[in-house]
Image 1: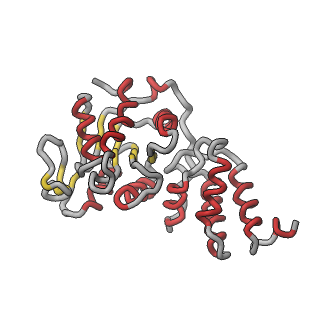
Image 2 (image 1 turned 180 degrees about the horizontal axis):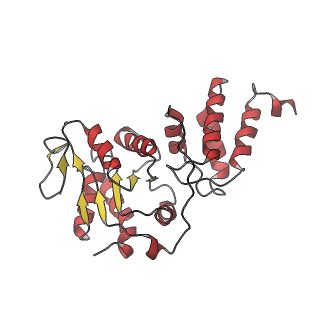
Image 3 (image 1 turned 180 degrees about the vertical axis):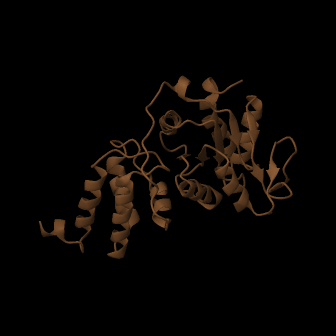
Length: 256
């Protein structure tokens, strides 16, 4: 029994995190409740005591995420762990409504890069949905100059970071679509920016039940302008097809 009360043992931290995880349900990414903050702070203590907080959290996540529908993913917790600012104030989730009443995507925002960005813009055009977004100065992308067929505005700078930040800023929520569970590069920056601004965001990938996650996310937030982000073609071949598959879930309620 001593292990349960000794902070120098792994069992102690498993018990503490498990207690917090079971204390209440969690709010979706971007709107952490007190339990999320407490869990993050406890994991920081885990690291200070020399334990691997990622391994511990992965085991907690596997046990609890099916019972807590908004339990933060390991990627979301990694973003929270890197934040230095004070946690966001607690917000309450809106009451769930019928999906045809709750979903009203009027505009798609994206940055124009190859891969996920371009696929989202092409999808919006095909479905006669308004689109826009910020792209780097000179309409820069990895395949050259972004076509004028996309209604994008140029940022003052040529780097990709500025357009990533501004697209998060100018949208109601952000959808990050990847082929793998781990967020890296611009996708990770996008998640950071959404967290920093307190904007709802969701990460989906093929290896999980992304359809139910997307439905729940859309039902819980009033989203008219959706920012879509993800990796480029060169780092994630085939990402465009998955982005289209994900966005097709919006078709029944998107304006035409």
